[in-house]
Image 1 (tube, helix red, strand yellow):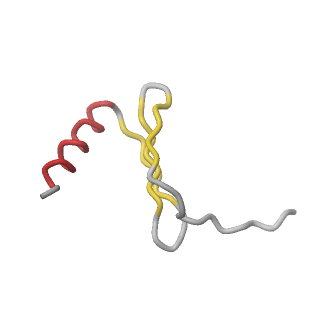
Image 2 (cartoon, rainbow, N blue to C red):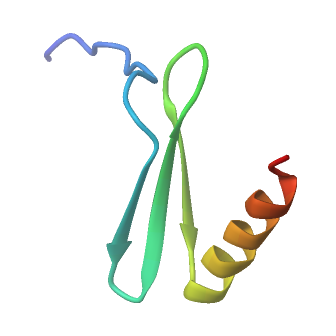
Length: 55
C-alpha cells in the first residue's frame, strides 16, 4: 500500500459548476478543504450575504 500524504489547504478557493449545482472548495488552516455543494439560489444568497458583509 502506498504511503498517504496529508492534503494541504494550500491553493485558492474554487467554485465549479457540476451538473445542476455548484461545488465550492475552501482551503482550511491546518490542511484539508471544506467542500460544499450549493444550488443556484444558495449561491445567489451567499453572494448577497458576502457583499453586505464587506465595508
